[in-house]
Image (cartoon, rainbow, N blue to C red; front, side, top):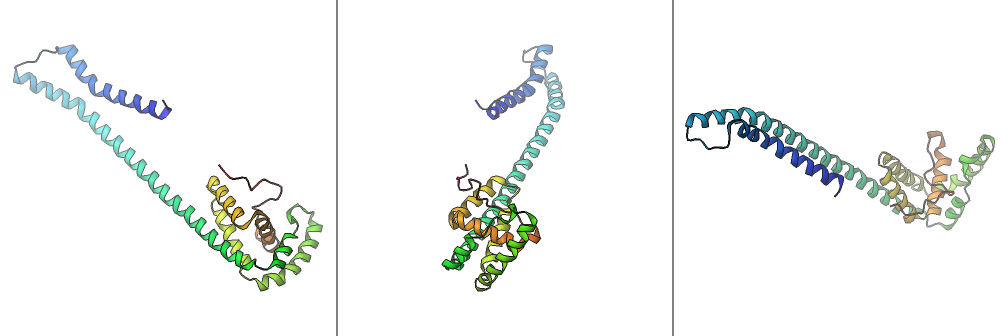
Length: 214
């Protein structure tokens, strides 16, 4: 039996005890003999009404509060699922554009030669960034949809930061769709072109990002 089932059993027992306790107390004090006196029946009815009315009112409030909580969870789930579905859809559409832009073998080769700028010393990074920016500039002019499309993927991944498990799943999906070599290269290209905007790497060649998430 799970904790949830145990909790429901205890709740059921508590509710039954609350409803039966007044009857038990009444029988203990006044006996269980059924009276033929209408006045006594009226008195018992008044007593039971005074006891059960607030109990039922409290139960109604609890049920309404529970319904509200369930509805809020359902609404949050629907909203969250909408965000996730939109992120997946937009990222996959962007990857289709990237795949078209990467039909050039020379562009792929140039991208794969991009070093890890984030791990360089500042003076070395400045020189390397200038050198590779001049090389990649011509490619980006010829393939002007490449970087904006990866920016879409990047923003969709960053947008799921509050849903880390979904972020990892989308990251894996992007990596397997584009290939991890391409994802790492695009990540470095994005960093090279946008590092003044505070962008971060999403794919690290030293990490086992290709492991399928649970």
